[in-house]
Amino acid sequence: MTNFARATNATPMPAISSKGRLMPPSPIRKLVPYAEAAKKRGVQVIHLNIGQPDIATPDVALDAMRKLDRKVIEYSHSAGFESYRKGLAAYYAEHGIAITHEQIIVTNGGSEALLFGMMSCFEPGDEVIIPEPYYANYNSFAVSAGVKVVPVRCTIADGFALPPIQAFEALITPRTKGILICNPGNPTGYLYSRAELETLRSIVLKHDLFLFADEVYREFCYDGAVHVSALALDGLDQHAVLIDSVSKRYSMCGARVGAFITRNTELLQTAMKFAQARLSPPTFGQLASEAALRTPKQYFDDVVAEYVQRRDILVDGLNTIPGVICAKPKGAFYCVAELPIDDSDAFCQWLLESFSHEGHTVMMAPATGFYAEPATGRTQVRLAYVLEQPQLKLAVECLREALAVYPGRLAPANAAVVESR
Image (tube, rainbow, N blue to C red; front, top):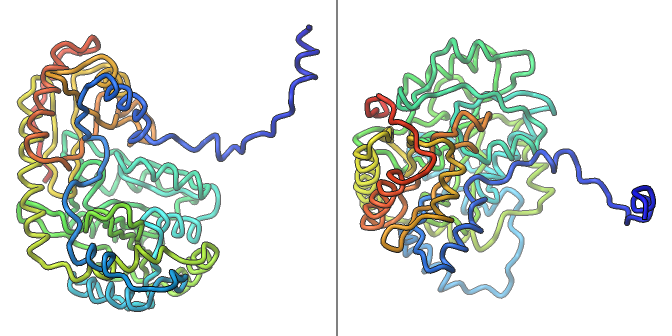
């Protein structure tokens, strides 16, 4: 049969959308098949690739689910149950954020909140500036909304601190409509100071931009550092959008409950139309989240103390490995490490396919997916210190042994250990 005959007899195939082709795969989950294969070979995989805490969900939330007595699992209001939104407003007041329950839309996780914000604030082709490295799914949300991500580079040498104001000014064009930050940050764990946030405030007001603040790790601040919310800054009532979630705060990732919060009435009404289109946030998740608001302070004190110990084990351990540089984060439960390797995607896959130390290996997220230009992160990885301390110690030893024999190892760079400011 000729090539022409094969072509004309082929079954027609509808084209996938350009937006679908542009949607990037998750750098956090794309190595899952290799991890599954390693486990089938009998290798125990230490999962530092994903921010799924092993911390127990608060008893008050679990008890609310166990004792649930409802005959119908109904829709909630599109903005979420009023009782939950009032509880959230009280929670934010305790953290110095003055808002009312009418300024909150409960969402299907923080992801939907950010999507609502992008679709409400930006036209297709508009630009949003994001300090990088940044949460990988920001790329996916931007593709979904037709928005162009413009990165402003943060470096491991500075502990991933906010770049100077001139770096932002150089990137602003007529299409620039917003700035997006994660505070404390995923993937770096960097916590912005009030001075850095005031710098962002001045840029936003000068250029009339939106400021999206992803603050889902608010509770997790270390070494005496204090979190400052974007909604606590003066003069940003029409500009600031707070993105929040219960996923990490209460170790309730599967609840899929977040929040979109703003004092901008027109923006809130616009986002509400998207909320109505998806009907309502999850009923079970809201009931658990409302109960979780009663979590005692001791729970967070204990969790923060545990994360500090885990951070120190992992980060200090990594910095004892020749050629490895890891900034010490002051928030969240992630860190980014610079490794003496040729390619982080290849290294992370090699760890799962070809390496084990005493029956163990480590799964990490290549940092290529946390930059707008993947090559920028080719020698970096993100690690999540969400496992018990013995597992983290074992992970450090695995990486030490792996780097000693990895075929793509590079000569160690002459760089000092850095800490976030």
